[in-house]
Image (tube, rainbow, N blue to C red; front, side):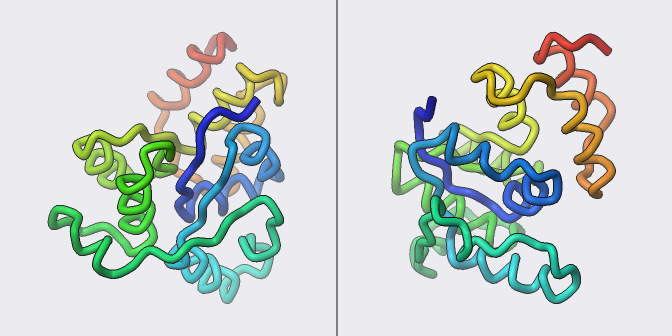
Length: 165
C-alpha cells in the first residue's frame, strides 16, 4: 500500500503516537525519514511528558542527518529546526513528501514545489487504503490530545472522508 517516502516532522510522530496510530506510517509510505532535529525536539518533549514517542525505538523509521548548510539554503523563514530540516530533506529527495502540520511550514514547502501531508491527510489516506474504518474518531482523539484542529478543517476532513458532518 505504500507509495512514496515521508520526511516527517515532530507533530506527525507526536500526535499519531498519542492516538496510537504510528503504525499507519510504515503501512502508507515506502520509507519514513526522521531528521535528527526532529529527534531532538521529541527528546525535549519527553522531558515534559514521558509518553512522547522516541523515533529511535521505531524499527521502520530511518533517522537522517540534515546539515546546517542544507537548511541554510532555504529561503529566509521563522520556522523551527525540525520543520526546516524536513523541508530541506524533501527538497533534496524528490520521492519524499514533506510531513508538516504547521501552516507557515506548509506554505513554504508548497511555495518550494513540495507535496505536503499532515496528520489529517495521513488519516484520510489511511481510510482510503482501508487501514482505518473511520476518520472521525481519530480526529476527535487528536483534539483531545491537544492537536489544534480548526473547525473548518475538521468539517472538510469529514467531507473528504465521506463521513458527513
